[in-house]
Image 1: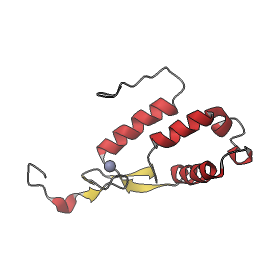
Image 2: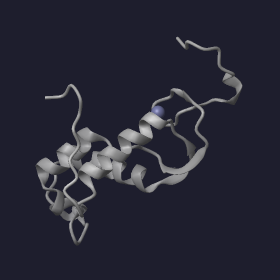
Image 3: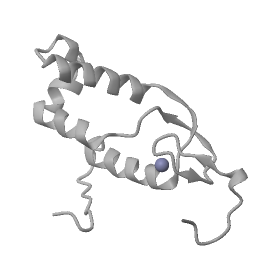
Image 4: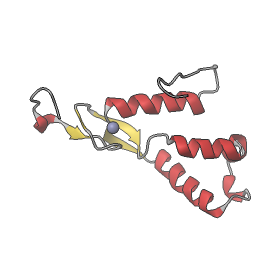
Length: 114
Ligand SMILES: [Zn+2]
């Protein structure tokens, strides 16, 4: 798989995708931003869920969705030192910009995606 012979001893599996990476440990949440979750959140109404009360548990949510949100929210809040590869960090950064950075009109273009 690898073109060069790498010293695998020094690589660690990425906590998010499992690929071996040379990255050092960083303080990161248990899960990257998940686009399918963010799309569901958008569909329901982001402000109603992450709005000023932030009390989406009192909303009339579909119970499956509520359970998913609960797990997702907990995993995003659960930050600990972990090794994550550069690809995951880049994807996570782009998704963060897309879904959470409202301050500017950041637009991402995905190559090969309609
Ligand atoms: Zn990764």
